[in-house]
Length: 329
Image 1 (cartoon, rainbow, N blue to C red):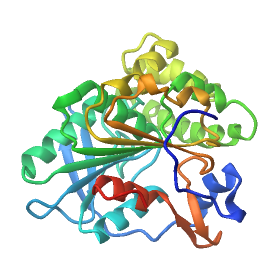
Image 2: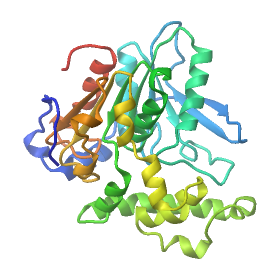
Image 3: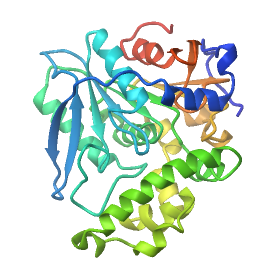
Image 4: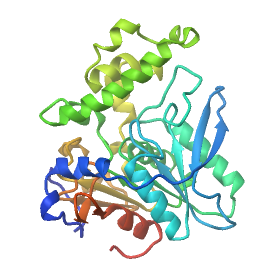
């Protein structure tokens, strides 16, 4: 991928120059899990959202809201690292779990999707009410980064977030879905589709939910690409008129120009989930958005040193330096 960007300081080590090494090694070299404090928010439609904290905020302590990616959670490698690093800098990090991604399945047939900003708004309203003196910063990874971008663009000056970072976000959903149907990227697609299929089958096994689902058991195994899955499951479950309507309405790219919150958008040029279509032109960026395109880094990788068994990452120090208002590392 090629496009306009600021000059990044990230450089991959010799052993992690492959985008697939950058993407896969973090999954294999995960930090230890930390005890979490769980908080449940009831939603207006009779469902719930789960938040996971390391510690609840002290008065005026900044909150870092973490939005995970597709089928992620507080146990995702990037979430574990930002939780630990944010806490070490005196911040109060919390993971917002998209529906069906926490420790318990949700109650409704609906799930979550790349443009689902209503649940994020509910979480933010809760944080503002409970911790009115704490500034709220946010970081979104992959799908969570697209949701965060869309929220910031929709809200403009009314955003509850003071500073934000968007990492490896599929800002043009249609192009990214097609990219994952090619080459080695099909391995990532297959891995994630199997998880999505399992969640759908779990809901179909419950009679009260099966009646609301847009497909039957024997159709699930036929959905082997994101395009197929989003057309037959995601779109109809969430009120879209097919996959193309969903991708058009939910893609974050058009919302970048409406963001007024100071925001860093970070992409890797070799991201195996992406194409050039995710790269904004200068005209698509508001003055509040800083865009950083690194030549390497893979998908939510950005390993800058260490060893394959104990990698050292660029992401956390770059994210936290931006959120805290420090100069780039």
